[in-house]
Length: 393
Image 1 (cartoon, rainbow, N blue to C red):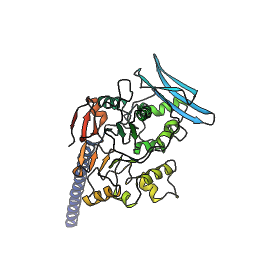
Image 2: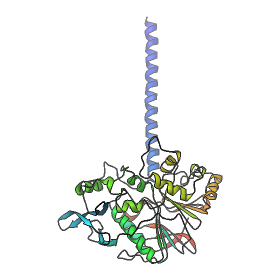
Image 3: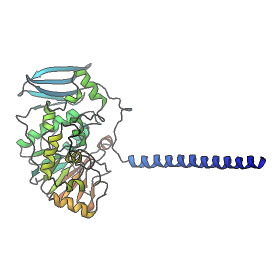
Image 4: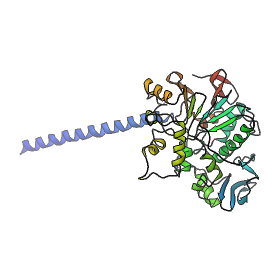
């Protein structure tokens, strides 16, 4: 009996040691995971989560909604002692005012006479400024536009026959999304009058907001929607002016022999055999369609992780040379310019066949600088908000 108890004690001792080892290894694994995760996310953009978003009701609009009786205009206007909500009928030919937050500054614009779908292909212009992922950061956006000579101090187009390329994600995270969108809308009209062009290319966050996915929407906008008695889902619906305008945009464009896309181009997208025009047309077709039993492979491909809005494999250097060459040949392109995946600086990938332009603009702007991609007769380079050009690395 004593020997049996001794053996039993030994078994319990070994078991307890094993359990201790398991617990120790589990803790070490968890610690290692946290370290690795923090390293990975050290290079993600500055953003807010639901827990640390302290934003609330503030200046916004105009949100212009079309209905059977004409148009309604909703705004939250800053005043000396706070804000006033305004809801009024609007006329197609009137001049609208956009307040830039509570800064006291404004700009004005008129609505477009018509909105038509954008072409997929353009000849190469003499100069281009390319910047993506502004995410509602109006101050940073204005800084780079002014420094690069695209606008003057009154936010008027001064870029002549140049092209401004904006490959997506001007929504979410920041607090001046509406102002950014109306400025782009306004500059688009002014650029066309001067022989230039604004290319607003859809990113995943534009499409998320149009399709009712509001995971990254700041509390300010939801509070404003409540104050205006205008559900946020209607702000960018097909009945709103901005919603109609956004639905005319592409998610992929060819300018010269360069492809501009928010996320990237995957081998799966190439294998689908769709060209740029077909991809853009299909996105418009399914923009307001829910995923259900009638959804096709093409629907899933365009809207999910291997599609042009979300694909990160090209930015993470996951493609082989053969895969990338196949994609370039399929789109008859020399280079692909992408946003979506954050880099510390604008970066050449795959020996210059891909240029990654997404930066942490919010953090950079807090540090006093903004960078964007520049193109002229000398090729591609980097420009800052002081107008200084540096070589592309």
